[in-house]
Image (cartoon, rainbow, N blue to C red; front, side):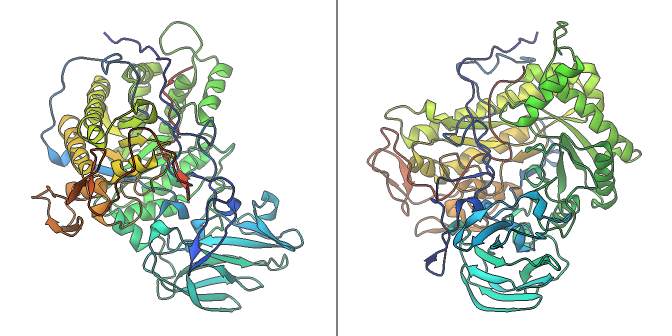
Length: 631
């Protein structure tokens, strides 16, 4: 018999969005060609998604405190392991298209940072541009007197010669960045970008004045010799190579929950700003998935109207490459009180008089409204894909540690009949609250994290039982380690770069393949290490594998070509048939084992104060974490 979970007073704490950038004052500075660019906070700070406050982050979506892993189990009966390896797909959540995600997904460099306005008399910092100054396509059509447009560009790691083409009166100028050979003429700005390391967060900023009678628009910046019609950048395709599914939640506005989403007001290919409205156009999402030879996973904004959903589904149906399926999810984590959509869902449930999924006759809440919204959206997708349902995977997503509620809400008004798969996010981690005096890196890597990973698989077995009860697939929308030590950044860096993380990931993925056997989407593609966690499989695109043990484990599992790993003076070549790599290590005074190329911490006996942050990202995509499931 299923047991209703008891919500512990120590709930899973709040985490951040991987793709939100949190900075204080002017602590974030980009450097290029040896000089500080001094970019203002408002230009490069992403929306604060710490979900309660931009303060200390925390917890995970799949861990409970002081509760046995079977406290809300659906069944204690073991599920037979899956023996068909072809049934298992390893996917990944892609980051945002923004500069701070340390990758360049789109050919056009302008989407790295939204347009800002800068007061030039006197010279001042950048400010957000009010909506009335944009045209219908997201280009700045006018500004107050004395202001110019300021915009940051992505900086491809390889550098090269670039050209910005545009329409309208005026000249584009390079304000700062690792550039040379700059020349500007009507309709074109040319420059050379020096090769750079994505982890350095260098940026190129351009500025221009606005002539309201013929304002600058249709700006396209890319390599001078590149195709002018290519959408997806080759370096992005190289990083996602081998993944079978790409989840694009961070390319949409499914988390931010805009008040109204219509096809008429959506962002279109070539628009000037994808940070507004519904995010990256569906055309770009489908192109990226097709180019990567992967299944797209799309998230439909909660407030999208029926016409938008129908047209979106129709475009996917007609343009997704043959042989692929589209995974469709409504919003993101509607169980998570850190997101505004959860409160909206609860209020809508109250307004509609929805009854509880527990059959008590009492009013329901956000979970019941989520089930209803899933039925509404999936009915539209089913109609569009009529006769082609084998190309569609309709997803019901819920919290990993709450199989009880997954069961209840799938049964609620027969929601299970409208979907094809149950999805959860199996994270395993270590939070500041579980850090104890004297705890060593060895104890974390050898004992704690492996145990947490095994616990995540155990919950997965329980969730799979729920899915099987309704004859559904069981997949993950996110997955991976969840380590947050906001007061001990040096230890967090050690944990993330420790070669034993490679073994933990290999074991975790293999166990999931064996015991679950269906699609797993890791979180996330790239992301730096900060006080809010370290969610990227690697810190930046094409990071050396000796510094990225998670990425190394994933590449070998995917069967990516032979990788040469330099582990501190010794280069070890590995293939998928020889997955073990022995790193050159040293033993620090605190007993931790680290690479020879790393520096021992002063102490790990007590939490230390993290250094001034260059840019903090919380766990994104999958957003803030609380254990509270339903109202």
